[in-house]
Length: 269
Ligand code: NAD
Image 1 (tube, protein in one colour):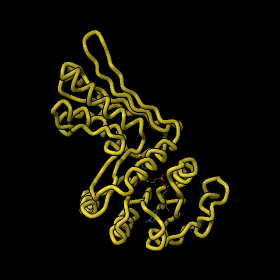
Image 2 (cartoon, protein in one colour):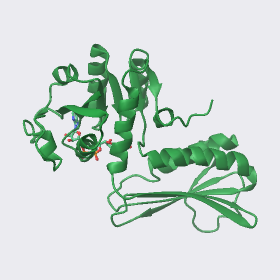
Image 3 (cartoon, helix red, strand yellow):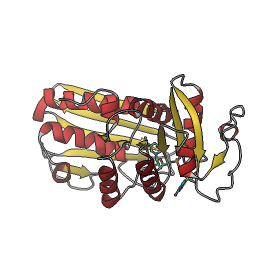
């Protein structure tokens, strides 16, 4: 049984994680944490997530909470992640990082910590997206450079960045498999007299609107056929279930920096 503490427990992902733990027989909800002064402090964390009371109260004392846990799952902001790294290092606990937007220096600090403790860092904990990444590598390697690659993604109207991190990760997987550098071959949108398509490019197109949780389609367009690998998310619970799967997998592993491809056994030798 893995004892799981959640940092960012009052947030959208934190609440989804509390619901996921309630449905996971291999995990026990050990502690709920958020920033000091969070308005929900002191409340029963399961109740915040719409569940029956668990007796686990929302706190902010990372050190005390970690003493009860095997693994910390962090879905906060980069400052929260850096505090989590220090706390996990000092108590030699495993750390699952879901927070996005870490700077290069912050990622370097995570990699340094992973020399002493097991850390899982992934920009997307969806099991389906990670399976798609593997399928994309197979498709790109097998179809080869004769197929044009285009990536179309759609998200809700509130999303502030484009293309999505997941679309970029998919483009990276295809570029790696084709021996290209994404920064040299990516085309982000087209307008006007663009000329004929350069065969070495990977095109990105972005749709924004409504309440779309996240759709990604990668097209391989060849002569006489087209292959599409698509993923459509309908709720954030898939990220929570994937992150929890990572937490159960990570606890007790040797120190190292892992990602969801490792958790799911999808990394190629
Ligand atoms: P949110 O704003 O709903 O929740 C964030 C929570 O973190 C809040 O409760 C906030 O009080 C808390 N927090 C902020 N700074 C903190 C700190 N320094 N210490 C402790 N707690 C702190 O956001 P969300 O939608 O739950 O997303 C959280 C993060 O997870 C974002 O970076 C988001 O991009 C990322 N995310 C990643 C994945 C993935 O699969 N990797 C999926 C969804 C979201």
